[in-house]
Amino acid sequence: MARRGNRYGYGGYHGRSRGQGVLKVIIAVLAVVLLLVLGLFFLQENHLAFSSDGAHLSLPFFGGEDPLPEPEVSEPVVVTTVPTPTPTPEPPMQAALLPRSALKDGTAPALLAEAGGNTAVFDMKADDGSLGYVSALEVAKQAGASASDPELNQAIQNWNAGNVYTVARVSCFRDNKAPYAVPSLGIKTNSGYNWRDQEDLRWMNPTSEEARAYVVDVCVELAELGFDEILLDNSAYPTQGHLEYIKRGGNYDQSRFQEIITAFYTQVETALAAYPDVKLSIRTGGDVLVSGQDAVSGQSATALAEHADRLWVDLGEVSLAAAAEALGGAGAEEKLVPILGAAGGGNDSWANLHTAEN
Image (tube, rainbow, N blue to C red; front, top):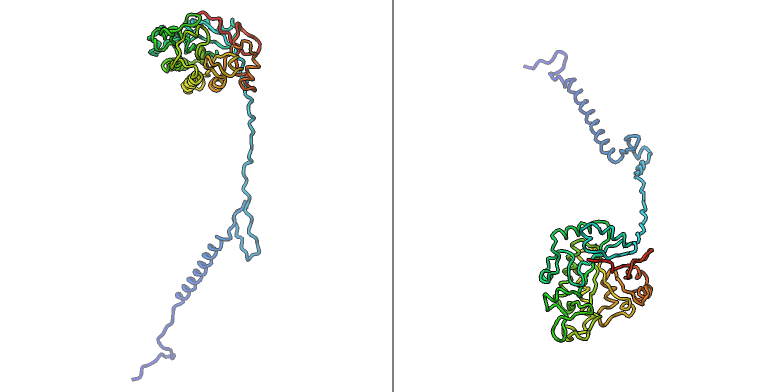
């Protein structure tokens, strides 16, 4: 039997609902919006500009130009020129020999003022071989040369820590004590005895390595005590007295005198290198500087100029200007301290080594 149809001639299909159509439209709109947002995000990375007015898009198709970056503002560079200070020249050395007792009894300032000086010199190794301090050296102990006051070294250090410039005089080889206690140190006569000079004082032999080492060690001990300057006196072979009585030979070979004395100055200078604030000075004669050398003593102007910071000079008949010219001309005069028999004056350097009673 034939199936009966709808009375109005339609079949059973009802079609899609209105709600499903609206949903599709919404989804499509959202997709478009999402694509626009993503496009703008990637676009702004290349065309988003920042300035003092804020952030904005600079799009080439809008005909705008990319804004120029604002210049960085840096602090101005201020260059300060520090003037080079003019070195203050050292005052002239005006030195006076004071008694050793002044190192401890407090009279040194008054005695120095009375002498008219600004530099105090002390006989720390005298011509007789005695020492003005307590030494730890074996030769000094054997010779009975060391001082015995246990408070003396501390008093010396306290004095040297003050404002007065201090010089320790060292009679190097003219030494009456050491050759007597240790005969191998002394200059010998042809008879084998210790030779004595015109004042009846013994001398250590500069040729002896042990004698040189003893003097070097004394200088180091004095540097340890704080002296500003070490003055080497009688620092070569003797030039006065009956030199003809001295036994010549390997231990007293005049052809080696200059070599040995120069080596001795080198030894002292090397030992004092550990004390850069301590100056090394050497006493010499004006004739040595002018002639260039003394074959009898072994001193040479070249060695003196090379190893000494300052030269204390017995000028004799030589003028200060001639001695300075022989030493090297410009600036050499400042290195020289004339040794006078009395205090000098004015703005000149001078040294008086004849005033102390130890």
